[in-house]
Length: 111
Length: 234
Image 1 (tube, each protein chain N blue to C red):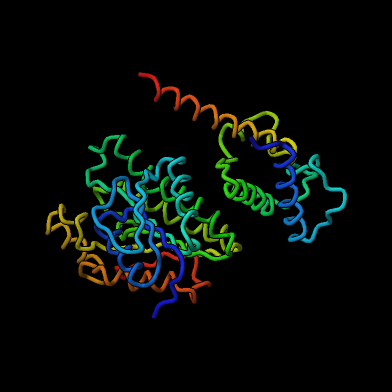
Image 2 (image 1 turned 120 degrees about the vertical axis):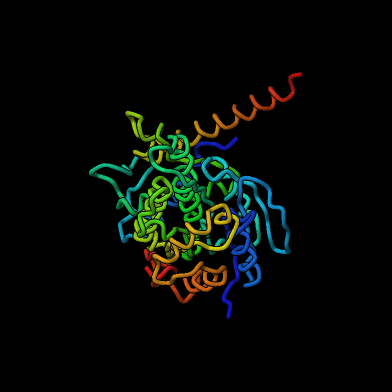
């Protein structure tokens, strides 16, 4: 089972790279730094790239998740507001996928 | 001349134009992944058949996972899978409209989106969405099909803008009637009426399609994006 700290490490590295690409300072950036809203660290284009890079990097690790969904976008507290919130959301998606697989396995083993 | 090296994905490659395009891309040197709802009835070296319902987001995700597992990177996507139905608007069921929108528009969108996520890693990609001369002709009897392909053309032009900074071009190829299974059910006089209304007043050939495709997917076509290339002379 993937740990939150591992996710944060991956995500922080992707965020830092995106900030460097857009020529923004990376000093003081943490998992609590805002990703969206008026104080967002990144441009909207860079934000799109970050989300796509996170999805692809997780897929390389064998974690197939789609981060953007109607459900995610309609939450009153956006899971995209910080890396900390996003990592919690990814863990939630992974757990949901795992429990779906467990449920499917138990259904297929029932007579 | 060929500058092929990577993977090409063709939706609807099971038969007809899709199969022809897949075979052409194989001959050009690409590894080809074919994605149709049902298993293809043909095989070839370098061809990987991955049955996929492109209207299903999870299935498209699985398709891309399979593409990632192959050696090489995805360079070309041909969104060919489509459904059409000829019927007067007054007699067209809503379910037919939804089916056409799902396959022709939503399916194309999902494949473009997921393929672009992979392509942007190599800062290179060529996406070609197939459209139809039925769009500029405002073809009567094909309201839903024309609406869905109009949407594909608009999608193409917006994605061209969004994806250009990733090194990905997105174009549409607008086809006249081609002598394939899809047109064999259409009465000959209807087809003649249609081709007579085109500046290029004949049925298109599969060679016409591959010639235009080669231009759009060429590595030298990096500045050709957001274009609707019509083979009917429109």
